[in-house]
Amino acid sequence: MNRPSLSWKLYIAAFYIFLFAPLLVVAIFAFNASPFPSPPWRGFTLEWFTGTGTAVGKPGVLVDPIWLDTIANSFKVAIPVALLAVLIGTVNAWVLERAEFPGKTFLSMMMLWPLVIPGVVLGISILAFFSRVANGLEEWLQTDLDFLRPGLSLVVLGQLSFILTISTLIIAARLRKFDRSLEEAAFDLGASRVRVLRTITLPFLRPALIGAGLVALLMSFENFNTTLMLVGSEAPLPITMYGQMREGASPAINAVSLLLMLGVGGIASVFALTSKAER
Amino acid sequence: MSQKPARSLTLFLLLAPAVLWLGLLIVLPHVEILVLSFSERVAPRVYAFGFGNYLEFFTEPLYWRTFARTAIMSIIVTALTLVLAFPIALYIARVAQGRLKAMLLLLCLLPFWVSELVRTLGWMILLRETGIISYTLRAIGLADQPVELLYNDGAVILGLVYGGLLFMIVPLANALESLEPSVVEAGFDLGGSRWTVLRRIVIPHAMPGIVAGSIIVFMLTVGNFATPVLLGGKNGLWFTEQIYAQFITRFNWPQGAAFGMLLLMLSSAIVWAGLRLTGQSLGTTLKQA
Figure 1: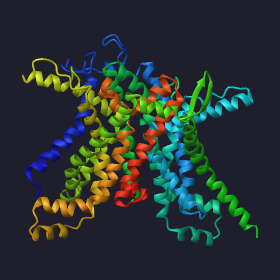
Figure 2 (figure 1 turned 30 degrees about the vertical axis):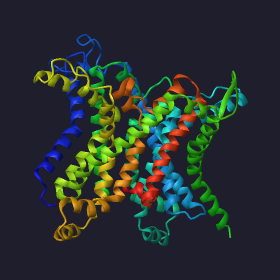
Figure 3 (figure 1 turned 90 degrees about the vertical axis):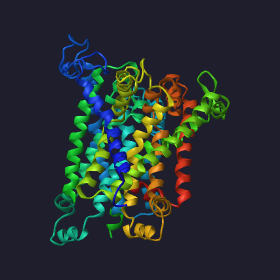
Figure 4 (figure 1 turned 180 degrees about the vertical axis):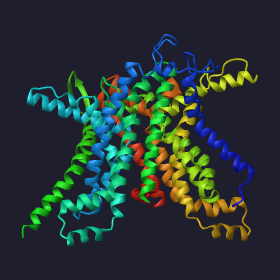
């Protein structure tokens, strides 16, 4: 088995071409000076990024308010999701690794559960539940509670429902490796609990906290299924892309996709570097 | 003496976020759609308990056919993904060494950091009537008119297999990693052919990875929305689309909730059956991935 046959090697090569073909195609046709992202090649252009719309009919994505707004919406969701995922994930990791209480096995099983629920079902269940809560509270308080209606705040809650599982697992895995004698030594030397946490435990957890935050940021940015059910009038990036892709093709979507790939590549390499530093 | 109440207060505070998260975002919402799925409209704005939404599912052919189609296509996609991924995982785990191995695995991971929509867009540009494959076929004279490769089952399966590959390769490669080379050699020394060694030694050893990968790919495929809708067009007919249509387009939430429960049951049943068949637990399976 150590000498792979030629056909096996060819298969591997073909597989990697298959894997990258769609991404390459998306990137290349972001620069085609044609109103459609399809061959033939009509020359290189940056109009789809920075153009004013005179040459290709639509403004480039970096100046088009539709795309700029949708990217801003994605950040409005992703940043709170990432911050809350790290904060609550750390507390959860602590519960899983340090606390002892009856029902702990059950709780840790429950924390895994969101991963096996289809995203669409998570979306509709949260939509239905919060609508009921909003109806009840509005009647009682006699005011509008828009943040419980479809919109960016509900998207944040929907994405958190499963991203919290991921961030909890990442941080708990790191906490498990922690050598508790380090904390004990600090206590023996007279440090307070807060000080031990701040100077010993949290610095140890730092790579996992950054990693969990970046993964949460990425997952939030790219989530489609759950977001689709909870979105209101302000759409994050994947929702707008989906809408435009259904209407018909325009290389503007390719340009946005290329920017997204570059952003994701950047985040992924930071993540790879921090996880390497962890080892 | 004051240690104990202080300790339970700390525990309470530490548990609060987890309980709020699981309670408000998972358990109660699922109770809500379960209750909703059993409510029928008896008059405008008046609802009563009943099985009507589930009856509607079984009596309207479009609904149960879409459901069955989604389940069957997902099984096909899972099987195809397994077959395509196995040689790659075997190569990464057993043949490639050092930097090549790390690079091959990294190259597998890269496309999956990119949004599903971007990957689907790539396939649309390749497959559509005015797309690259059609254009190339005409340019080299294999076709004399544009060929539409999009909006059929093949395109849907292709897109879904593509989306599932990584989630199959990683658990497979992890499982194959621990296979002792001496065991494989012993198999050959005892006169086993390549095929026998693969079937009797390599595949049984990879079983935990096969199960983990298959479960994850099936779950992701059944719950997918964008790939079948965009690559299949009107012929996509995926069950998640029916849920979306009931909830968002037709505003028939009880019906949509019943569909959601059915999808959840399908997905859970397959996960449960897969774990049961091989005697693994959910925790270890998710760790494989």
